[in-house]
Length: 85
Image (tube, rainbow, N blue to C red; front, top):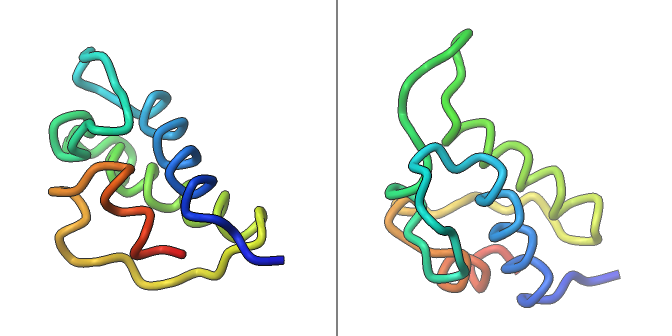
């Protein structure tokens, strides 16, 4: 079963809502770096946890674990999703 760009975009958006540390309203056009903090707690950051959970969600929903672009923090759910299909 292949995963669609739309589902990946939704998974990224949904996870971003839960891991956002900025307090800002999150939507599909929110840049990841503006919503995910870089402060470490117990060796992890909201950024790394978000990415790991999102990778897991993509795989369990029929996608493959593709390498993320090095500039993913400068993207939005809408612009990152096509790279992960």
